[in-house]
Length: 203
Image (cartoon, rainbow, N blue to C red; front, top):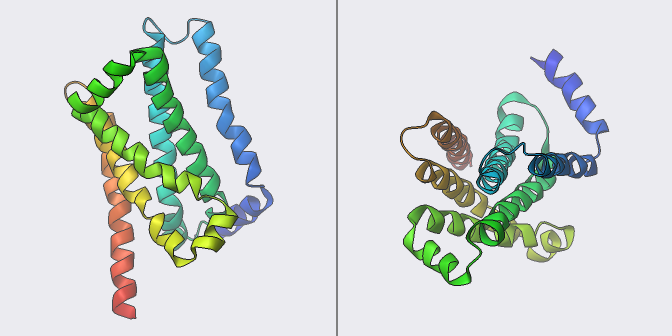
């Protein structure tokens, strides 16, 4: 295993974290290009909204997987965790923006939908949890908040779980893909919970 992990970690160390922000922009460019060229189907706004939301959830899952990957497999991607989190937040914000500006458009209807449709309420709650995490994802906040910063960023767990529930509730009928995301998130959260329990027992 180490014969695979060590070269991978050495390669990762050579990649600057800022490169991830450039890569993170590319799907948006691709989606915009598809939107102008008819590549988003008969309902381009709905499709754009869906793809942005799905990308956001994938990035949130990726961010959640970084620590378990290091603990259980030795793959160290910690230097990318902040970039993954911020890019994920950007995609969640874009997903929300498309829904607000291009889909619903009417301010009164937006508030009514948030109150009336549970899957939107859940999605908005997840977004609200992500806001303080995005605002404090900088070195100044880490220094200023101290140990509180780590506790605050545990809100990630709730935000990711709400994102998965939002997706499961959103789709019509039985669809396997949202359930796979939900299962992956439950699995990753369970790994974290078990690790925390082991640490407490060891202490």
